Image (cartoon, rainbow, N blue to C red; front, side, top):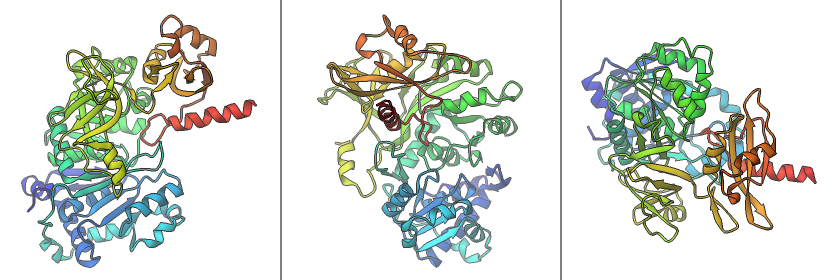
Length: 508
């Protein structure tokens, strides 16, 4: 037995307890059943396929029980799981396959035609369908029970390669280690009070760290139970939260907005929920209040693939009084806020957030240059600009890369967006810096209006006048039916810039 093998322990302690349920198929597994299956898969991978510690195993599928089987197999064997994003374009998928070089890939049948267009697929030694993996799982070969976990695993060995969304260029493969996994679970468990009695519905995509490491892995570390969905559907999730008596649920604000607008919102009983855990972006006050009125407190936080992801947490009691804050750092996280010269900022000063601790990645897969730029003297440079109030609460001002300089003044789009959200007609707003001959850069606002509301560019400008410094006021406004989002449901600012230039060309 090794310290990375959580599943064997829970199979001993609570073997008959349900570990996971897959909603769409109604498949369930207890901890003992899951352990037996994982033993079989580990035995097959090592003894029959000849896979070795450090080899990559990719999966190209929607959320499934098979993802969790592969995860626990990695904990026992030292294999590295590469969950691929099935929403990407073929060249992007091909890049990740070429970069990760898995020896084995498991493909959901509905995606096989897509993957077969990738040149790199031909270089992979073992190409299995999900049913082929299921056949291995259902095999009763007794030799598998004699499989022993890999005793020479090191805490810095990767358990995942998690690719970032790539919204700003070539995706980076973040190494996610056994040590990160353990300490992230400890941080999450301590701040969210997770116990073995907890239950959650999990629908965040498993090609993101948020899908893996906010709820599923800390829950499974604690011997709790999860119900896994292939994807998010507002009505389905509301019903499941009620039927499964879920105690916790992780989402982004867009998901909670859709759930609040769902037909069954008023009637579902969510009394078992201690709170929602929200990340990705700040949650607007009206939505917080809507869920509080429903009896569901809002717990907000901050994280990123390279650290944690559970970095900070804002207690639900502070959801309104400290609205917009990401809370305070989790237990085993050290923070610094520094200016461009690397000097510590005083309380209230804006600077880049630096993080240190056992949940920091050792780096990017086969990219020493990016690793050296991101991690300096053990401190991870997040690229997020933050400030800290006198009580120690952190507030994200903006991404460093989103900031633009207009007439020599720093402008943080998030600050202006937050103000414009107070305009009743605005549903969504995003601001980017665009080139300007006089000022160097100026702001351009992209606005989505609420149904039944109308708004003009002049009305937006007039609303800002007197409330914002002139250099912060967007010079132009473009109205869209929806803002482009990436797979993490975050605004894709690179695409907004493309929309700007496309509009500019069309007008000439």
